[in-house]
Amino acid sequence: MSVESISEADARKLVLISQGLHRSNPFGTSLKATLDVIARLSYVQIDTISVVERAHHHCVWNRQNNYHKTHLDTLMQQKQVFEYWSHAAAYLPMSDYRFSLPRKHAIASGEKHWHVKDKKLSKIILQRIEQDGPLQAKDFEREDTAKNTGWWDWKPAKKALEQLFMEGELMVLKRQGFQKFYELTERVVPTGIDTSIPTETEFYDYLIMRFLAAQGLGSAEDIAYLRKGLKAKISRRCEQLLEDKQLLKLACLGQQYYALPQSLHLLKQRMGRKQVRFLSPFDNLLIQRKRLKQLFDFDYQIECYVPEPKRQYGYFSLPILWGSVFVGRMDAKINRASGVLFIRHLQLETKDIAGLLTDLLPSLQTFLRFNQGTKICLEKISVPEQVQSPLENFLRQQIESIQIS
Image 1 (cartoon, rainbow, N blue to C red):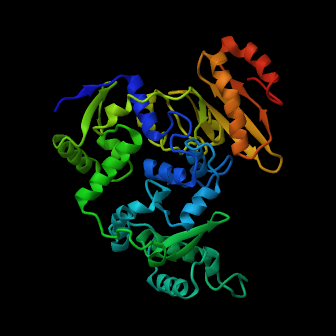
Image 2: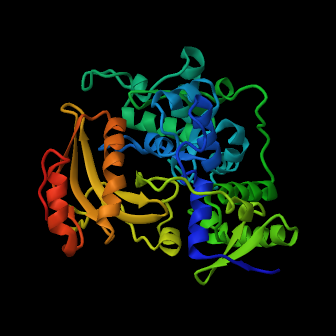
Image 3: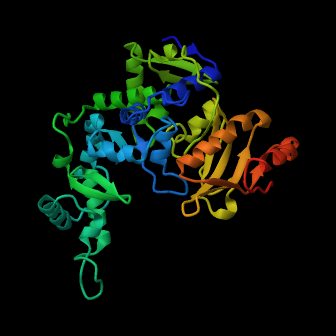
């Protein structure tokens, strides 16, 4: 099979077009556009960290400028998306429901483990939800002389609920205050949704085609990301699809990648106006750090899990994408009470500071509004030494307070 070479610039362009990050509002501006974003990406990771807007909202907003946080709740109510596990907890298109079944069946059978199953407790939980309707974990608390809260210990019940969720007996009907309401699966899955278990080949094709549609190009290792034991099987299936001309192979920067046949046609599209985007650390573009380094020459690590003395950029640094190039990172935190967006550390990694600032400042204001803030406080900025002084003078006129490192 022939291998077509593409440039680094074209590889990046293909990825960004596939990710919907090549121009403003490529999916449109309606509620359906939000569903289209999730369908294109195949999942959006659910984030518990809220120093700025949570990742599931942040990822969609970067691809749909008028996105509103109620959109995901509405799509859940309409049963057009559902919660389950991708490489992490995620919103997925309901149309892909059947492809969640292999993991569910593996956990239910004991082939894969989540929590140790308490059969007696699980039976009681299912009976109560069947009788009372959707319930939260707090509805299963114990009432006794030691604890005036419910009727059994919360932690075992929470584990049992999550086990039943991962097995597929329960689904999340909705969230309220970020707390899950669990419901019987048969009451959540809409009529007409295919609930048949995919064959191995169907499942591998789903993983391959979904990944390449969302990411533009990828290796078998990329496609099998965090799916233990699947890399060799994915690789074999990719080669079969290659022989059947359902895939093609591209070479870039000394690496070979699989891609969909229509990929080269995507490269005929024009990129939109160059703009700055502050990406969530859990954005679909970023989640595979090795791939990010290979294709974008950007070495990134989220540091919220790193001990504070060892952090280089900050607790929750957001990668800064300018056009098709990563040019820095911004550690930010919104104070929701005061409306101040604190930029703890802005690290800019380009010599074209003047050009970057032209696009960066409007994007900062847009990001501020997305986080429902009213003003920005920049505490520290790191830039190449030769532009430090003029940058400080410029920023003092634009931002309320600043301390230059």
